[in-house]
Image (tube, rainbow, N blue to C red):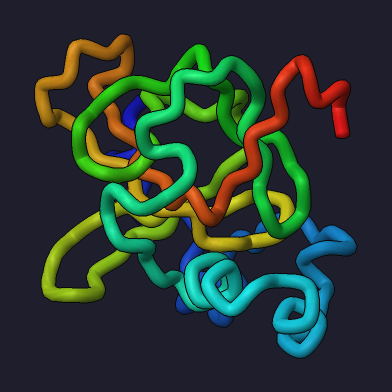
Length: 162
């Protein structure tokens, strides 16, 4: 089943306040706004905690072909791998699937006068980007996870798990 047909059962601020599903609590998710501001750069905070977007073609990973695992820059949760990364030429890193079910969560986003599906880290609820479907890319899922570079940290085999 497509994530796009699950919109109503996914979490949103309205669902959470109405007693709907809420992501599992973690130490990272329990941080205060002030703690996030101290730990993140101004740009990381704007994107990860305020659902901002970095300018296209400016992020560290939009055109990277380095092998490794992409972690959430806020909490370190493993989210995507380079095996699912593809060149979409949109200006942001693009993946056709997350690393595993449950690593990201989805929110139906109606901001800016359009309908989109927001992608957040399931561990700390940080904004990562959006996922789009049916754009005609030759990927196994027909989906494009358009993720901000500033939301990610690439860990390569050379990094030794640092």
